[in-house]
Length: 70
Image (cartoon, rainbow, N blue to C red):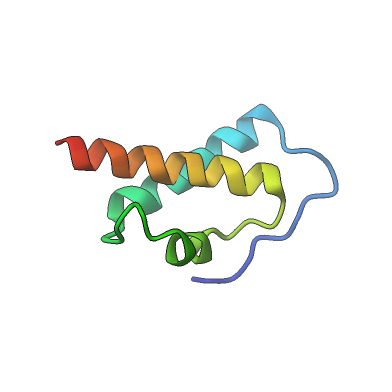
């Protein structure tokens, strides 16, 4: 863990973005980090491109928000 995924040469497809979101969701649902801990959470994000990092973070934060509401 902690290895960065290689940046793609082309923009990610909608399917790829959905998989990135899912990976963020899984990480968020398993994480014990406080949703306000920006830097430690950002360090978990394995993607380099802004689009991919944003989609992963969206999945992560939405999973944590769902966990908090339960």
